[in-house]
Image (cartoon, rainbow, N blue to C red; front, side):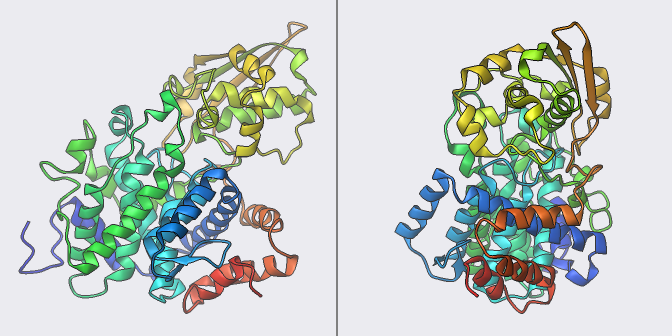
Length: 473
């Protein structure tokens, strides 16, 4: 493609995604999108706080300290500062490694941990305003989701984890939107996306063999997206037709693609509004089954001893990788529908209404023989009703428990709490944020954090937010 006559000519899918990002301003965002960005930030920081305590997060933090880097961007919940790429990697590890972060089900990826980490790190390094950062976050979410939708489901079927492969596009979009402001902005963003695509990777063998690599899939993609933007700023470029090109991303990474679908109504219809917020640290596609099981246990005052058989009706997309009853490690347990249901069933009627499964719950139960035995009892069957209601936004499930008396109780969940059709309210997000931040900060500090986040669009830069997150008054 030769754009020398007009550097902002839009002639292909990559250019159209770049053009959307280049033209986006915070003022132009609908109010519902602005409200969602506030909620995304609250959830991002809540999950990052949980994830920062994990052992692998310490590995990432220690490695960043060892490698050094210019002190331009802050590592969350600390006074540590490093370069934007490393800060993005570490912060994304915190927010994206425990499978509690936001998710777009249809594109099979987690945008917030990547896009927000990249935008905050670059925005802080360049002293950019809250408005600029929020607009970059919106652009990053939208491009990442829409590119993912364009290549699914064949991308996943070929063995790729799209958070890792498409995450770089979200980070690159956000970072490049912040770094480039000139007349050639569209071209520079497109070339940044081209660079990010060349670094893209992320295989799903961990589903079968275990390992901790998925804990940093999002982090690697986010860091490489920022790296791509910095390389473009330094003078490098990637192919500006990388997504749809003859030997480009779609041909290499999928058996079929439809960028018309990904680009449809971009800038007027917001796919980021379809992003789900998780109540539990497990696969989004098992959340309906978890919710149905918990409701049955509470409603009928059941304990495991009361239950003779467990059956769950699922759509076909669940069958296989997410229905293994014997997970090899914690990551696999979080992806296992039978194991997640078994964790709920072993607690039975003792579940409180605010019940949440976090990654430490999986750590504690992975080698619990009772939970493992219960998981093996869960019968997963294809169900027409679950198939009918499952969409690009959520997955349904029908749970049937046969009691020792022979009586059966059943619950069908069309879409889990936190999905686009059953979203958490702003008050829910604030309450969840306060609950987690209250473990780190005083009530006064938490109130100051909330005030800063509510008014972040008016912030001259992210400095005050980072200071508050580091515990400074």
